[in-house]
Amino acid sequence: MANDSLSDVEDVDLLVVGGGKAGKTLAMDAARAGRRVVMVERGMIGGTCINVACIPTKSLVTSARLLRKAAGAEALGLRLGRAEVDLDLLRSHKEGVVSDMVELNRRQFVGSGMDLVLGTARFIAERTVAITLAEGGRRVVRGRDVMINTGTVPRVAPVPGLAEAEPLTSESLMDLRRIPDRLVIFGGGYVGLEFAQMFAAFGSRVTVLERGPRLLPREDPDIAEALTGYLRADGVELLTGVTAEEVVRDGASVTVLLEDGRKVVADDIMAATGRTPVTRDLGLEAAGVESDERGFVKVDDRLATSAPHTWAGGDVAGSPQFTHVSLDDYRIVKANIAGGDRRTTGRLIPWNLFTDPELARVGLTETQARATGRDVRVAKLQVQAIPRARTLRDTRGVWKAVVDRESEQILGVSLLGAESAEVVSVVQTAMRAGMPYTELRDGIIAHPTMAEGLNALFTAWID
Image (cartoon, rainbow, N blue to C red; front, side, top):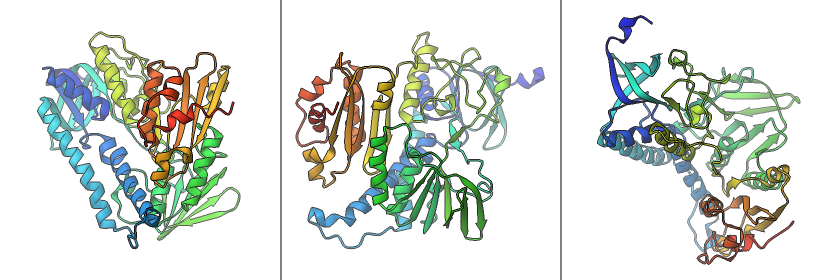
């Protein structure tokens, strides 16, 4: 790189490349503290979560749940008539939620005093990027500290013909231009299952193709099996242990040829086979920043990269792909830029799957706990035993807890049932505080709530 390419460099205290949860929060925080901050964002004000991931997806999950609830309204003493999807209204609902949050973020960015730059950044030297501005022109910015938070994009698996068939992804499907009559989803992970159940509620005939022998291999078999049953009851066809050999698009239809000779025909296909980091065109080599074989930025447990004063957080750094983890990455980087020593090791991270019923987990599964060699106790409670579930007319699900027999410490819970994503925070708090399970067994928890089920869970020992 010629020296004159840096002749017009602007020096700032903090340069943030990518405005995801970690990056935008760090940028606003530093700007409010009086530091000079530049944040470069390609165009998604607020990041992936707000624009094409968590927020729009959960908005549509809400619609799908209400549609299913309306279909069973007579059980609640109501006659609502026939409920159906209005695609324009559905899209308006989703876009309204997103646009409100985008505008809120924009106001927060401006109010913080940061310099928000819309454009594409590429490193040309350590801690220095050349920015191709969206409105035309170029800027060169160097940060005393740099945060990389460019996120990930959906990955299309290397199945012959799949890319050529122009599959939908978790992002493109958010456009909601149509409700497919027949939809095939590649991948039975968190993203694939949420979309499968959602579109089944909207009227699509959904088939999920999963290479593994069962869904959700990181969960205990009994929990995964229970959720599998509920998905099938909601009309989702689940094919496990299958391999797609080829995908062929013929006009308006798509045919998936399976290795065992079967064919699955659909109007649309969706790729839900993971995500790829946005690093290919970042020029990481010029910055002295190393990446792994998949393109994720290499970081240590302080989220420091291989280059001095250069940090990475969120999905692009290989962190668990949740917005709440990205927020904690911000806390870690903020502390360490200030000279602290905060680390990612030992974090207690909750996992939430927003199917209906929800699956929420924190800590170890029974399988994982037994693999450590601990002497464990296992409790299991059918959700139908919780009074609040009966008032909701939603008694599907099972709760499971794993406890260290000697110390009485909670090692983990898996909660499959209504409102589990809210209840799991209670257990997470108890685990962080080092409380024995007896505190939840004997605690006075408001009645009737789903959280009250924790009293009963920690008396329902099966081992």
